[in-house]
Structures are given as C-alpha cells and as structure tokens.
Length: 397
Image 1 (cartoon, rainbow, N blue to C red):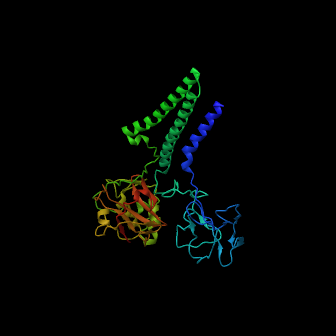
Image 2 (image 1 turned 90 degrees about the vertical axis):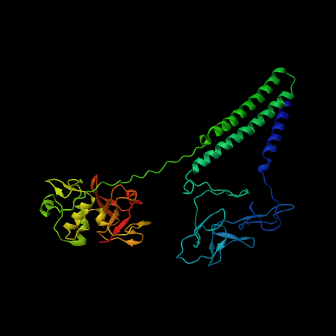
Image 3 (image 1 turned 135 degrees about the vertical axis):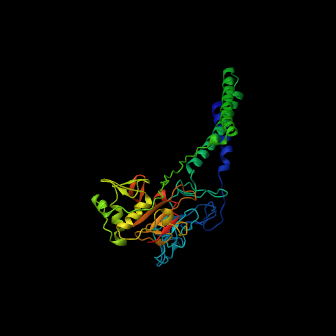
C-alpha cells in the first residue's frame, strides 16, 4: 500500500508539472478549426461541440469536401496542396512554392497546378498554438549561419530544465519515503535521495551559472567555418617601355605570331604562350631558346602585336589611363554589369586604392580570361575568386 501511494503521489506531481502544456479550446457548431483558428477545409464534423458523438469525413487528393461529400474539383479549377480547389493562372508564371504554415505562396506572383511544389522545411501536421508562432529550423537558410549552434544551445537549456524537473520528482519521492516509514534505514535512504537530488540540481545550475558569469561565449556551441578566399595579390611591373620580341623567335618556340589575324586571332595567339612563358619583370620583352619572359602588361602587348594590332600600352597604368573606374556589381558568364564582353577586351586594376600592384587580363570568350601571373600564362574563369571585387577597369577593344 505504501508503494502504491508513492506512485499515486508521483503521478499527481507529474500532472501538475506538465498540465500547462495542454491547451483545450472549445469550438462552436459548424466547420472545425485547428489550434490557430484556421478552418480545416477537408475535415467536417457533424458538430464541433457535440452533445453525443462526432461525424468525421476526411477527403484525400484529388478530392475535396463539397457539401459534406468528397468530390473532385470542377474544371477549370484544380486540386491545391492546401486541400481546396483553385483556378490556375497563366502558364508563363512560375509554379507556386507554398508555405504549409501560412498557406501562402512564397514566390508570388505564381501559378498553382495539381502537383505544386512545397518548401523543404519540416512543418507540424497539427499546428501548435504558441504566442509569436513557430520558427522553422532550416540549416540551409543563408540568414542563419549558426542554425545548428542555435539548436544545440537550445537543447542545452532544455536539458538543464529536465534536470530540474527530475530533481523535483526525486525530492518528492524522497520526502514520501522519509514520511511514510518508521524504519531508520528507510528514513536514511529517503534523506539520501533528497540530498543527491539537490546536489545534482545544484551542479547542473551552478555549472551553467558559473560558466555564464566567467564568459558567456563558453556556453556557445556555434559551428561556423570562416570563408577563405585566395586572392591574387598581383606582381610588380617594370617601367621599361615595351619592346616586341621578334616573330621568328616566337615562332621558333611554337607560338602563333604572324603579325596578322586581328581580333579573331587574339584568343588562339594568347593561348599559344601557355607553358612557354616565365613571369619576369626585369627580363620582360626577351626570350631564349625555350622560354619567353613577360609580365602581365608586356604579355598582353605582345599578343596584340602578334595579331597585327596596336599595343594598348606599356603597363597597366597606360592601358587603363584615361578610363573611368567602374564598380562591378554583376559577372554573369560573358557579361559584366549587363554589358557583353568581346574577345580582346582588357580588364583589371591599377596600382593604388588598396592594390599594391596593378594587373591586366584579356578576355578570350566563353566567360574566360587569360593573363600572366607568377605561375605563368593560364586561362581562368572570369568569375574566379581572385578577381571578385577587384576588377576596376574595363577597356573595350
């Protein structure tokens, strides 16, 4: 009997602790609503506050509740993921992506068809009436870089809360054990149970309070890896005027240099320097039996010369001299700020304004540029990280 009384008291305590979780809302006669007061279009009760019994009708896709019966949507309306019939709009609009919580499309204007797409976030089957609403946990949300950290921090607080609840339960059990017996060893066991519960609660709360007092950051479990961008710092340029290397010497190295071809030959000429060029500021404009020596500006000038075009300048300062600086806001394939690039267009930056050295690259088509860096001549995508936010000048050919 004594043990049964303990279990009854424990049950009473647990009901008292967790009773605030339950929320019962009486409903009036008519269509039923969920915990948020939103009507349920596909569920009908004969009486939402019935004196005797309920009559439940549930419709499944593609049928909806119409006059108490499950019927398909009448054309031209179609079935909606929300359980109703909607009229589709122009097929030129994108498909609606519907938020199951609000029932509203998140990419309006859009069109709804019989199999609309939905968000990938998890939504409760039955809404919970919580003041302020429920915030979806979406680790892919760009506005939540520490979503997992926030989740772990919340779990830590919930764990401490559960420790407090269990400690209270153990204290109650120890008190019952102490008061319902006359045996000395049982009373001691009850006292020990109470002492251990208090000690455990103090350790949990004390550890959290101590760490939070010393440094609140010790309690953070944010998992975030800082983004690292490898940027090309540029290389120094020579002030020595450009002097073209002879066509014979370049052709002897297998480089396409005929002094003709114009704009259409620029890309092939520039790429023929690959693997045969060494970056050098002091030896630029020269070549030996195996290697061409050039820096970024002399390389571009030499390519222009081999195509039979006038050189754009001796160095980046001259190449971009007189040009107005631009702010590159969008690089989209073959376009910068919406302007189509042509083969031979020059892009880059001049020395100063936060740049230790100037640099120039040449556009060769298909969203690629070619330039001479410390590692030699190479083709790179125009949207490479090393160019992000650094292109300040565009010189059209």
